[in-house]
Length: 376
Image (tube, rainbow, N blue to C red):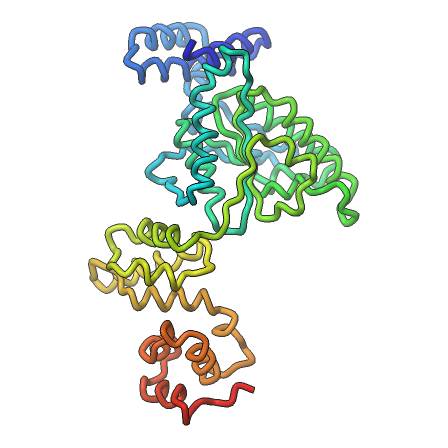
């Protein structure tokens, strides 16, 4: 039965006397029936909802629908609710990661088959890797593919200075996510999932980990849970076992860097993507995006239809060699010589001139065999 998961959630909500859950999943069922061309059946469900449910329960996919829980003391919400769309949540992944993500999505989309066969699913994924590699973007992409709202936990309000308040906040957020169709996303996961054998942590934070584990264990098997961290080495060992999928997103390889630059530049690209991808070696997607956006802004202000590849190359190079360029102990002349010696192909005389505001003649003299400074 194709819509068995939604029907089971409606029954569960009725048994628990949870009107919000009933209305949320009934509305989701109506949306799915309508997308399949069954407008009359969808209309019958919505008509029944309108006759028995409060208006606040009728739009689970709307931003202003069922209010998110709040911290008791600050009265700030424990999460942010968004409605990701595919056009704005594209993510570049290597083939191995892409295969795992597609499998994860397919299991969720075909959950009715697994449920009918008595085989439960565990729609949970832990995403880890260096900063800026697309972990948050992947969470948005997954929610967009599933056409579900994304509830992103807010660490600043979840973690409270009051004894026991953090555990209560976690429970409130997890209960809310279990009562409605959504994807619950725990970003900066290490903030409340640190190893309990860390002697530098207070007892209260260790109790938070226990509470987190209990909340994950009590989630309905069809509630979708995502978590992301830049510091997987800090996570408690028991946390890893709670996630059916554990995906590492590495720094982008040359092909992915080329795809990222093409994606970020869009209609402003000006060829030479392979060369730009080579310059961006070792960079994460976030840094590459910043450089591309800077190049686009310059093109727009200059009245150009395409970016200046040399300008973008310089921006990428500045990020790539920031340890030298920002070194306060070196003079600009010493930096010019050092950069030229490290990568003569990248740091041409004209690029070094643009970077340091020196004449090409002076750059040429500094980098010539006779004029090179002693780097000792």
